[in-house]
Image (cartoon, rainbow, N blue to C red; front, top):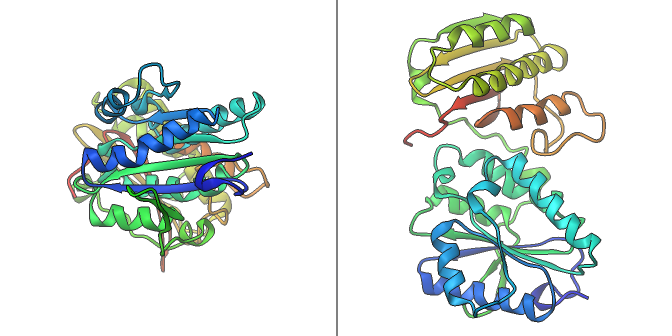
Length: 320
């Protein structure tokens, strides 16, 4: 039987915390965690080092709360979903009737790579809905931009307040709508430089060769090979499922390689493409899922001229 604000709720109870001080964060998090322990529910913290230590110090000794290594959990969206689903499944297999988790994304991902984490925050409303999960996602309003906070409000059905109330966000948008909205890709500064290669209707082999040729030793060999796999999968999908022409443009920067693959089609029909493995036979679903695990950032854009994917190996971070 579920307890607290999620009592009587079936599936995922997803909340945001918009905090502006340590006191605000603790006022929400401590009752949530201690209530879970008191009810005998698995109770988990997935914070970065600073806030994890803040919460750990505020909890009584031997509280029974589990602390995850936050930075490891949030390496990439697909990895986070896969990791959390395994964790949730293990608790349910042990008989848990409700699981409580409070987490936060690393500050670094709230900038130029926020787009695929916004997709993550939306998609997990579906991806975790087969578990009795009550989670809170904490966002520091002193750090997160207005753009990020607006997306958080739209991807979380509820907001947990320091006075103990749980209020509707007011602007929550169902994942199937949110994930299919057209969003422009923020231009990476390296895209303002001369491309290393431009190919039209390349074969996957030609695409792989272009990535290898662009490598100037600025990336580890494993990162390059991961990008080679991702580019090959993306070009294959565009040739098979998109509309011609397929264009591939590649830039080689000091700390990254950036590749865009465009075609004249509408892109994948599955709104969860890339974040979840396709289980319905949707075109290109497996390739996109592989791509999301092979790159340090993947951005997607649907526009009047077609569909574009941008793949980044190396450092995906740049000033906005």
